[in-house]
Length: 217
Image 1 (tube, one colour):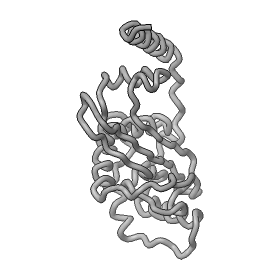
Image 2 (image 1 turned 90 degrees about the horizontal axis):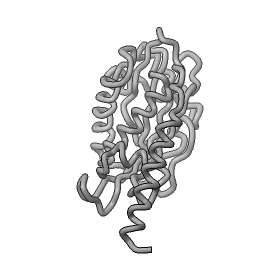
Image 3 (image 1 turned 45 degrees about the vertical axis):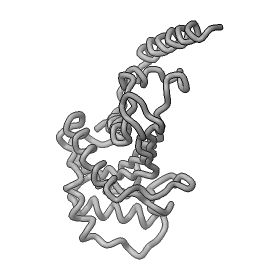
Image 4 (image 1 turned 180 degrees about the horizontal axis):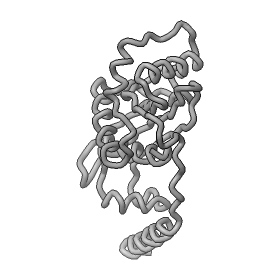
């Protein structure tokens, strides 16, 4: 089979997969928090130990992200919330002050982390806190038209009920951009991205929008 014919077959297969995926859209999830509830998003953090996570585990051998990445992610998430969520969700600035004034209790482990975020939510005067944590980060090497290294991110999003101190929703976003020929089963993503190679921040924004939708915010 010659190269030109193979490329044509790959394109036909990709289009067929896209049509199939568009016909199988999921129903919009119901909100995990009551409509009258007050919700705030915490600033992004880069945990370095499993006990800092509200659920799940750190990827193996993931290096710490660059210092400026969490702050930039806060800006991106604020933009996502402004364009796609309801007005009841407050941005990271509402929680940032409490992070400076609320000490972490002596209790260690995962339970201590949950109670810490419960206290942060009480300080912020909200009913629920969205806690985003970036666990792994690789920036694109190249441009939107062509990249030698693609972007890849791993981010956890938690929705914590301040009253109970429990996690009511957990969304794990683990995404590495692949070429169309490397992943035909997700051809829809290729066309949605218009064939562009995304930056890690653009890839993260996809995860943010998915988390907002999953939490019903």
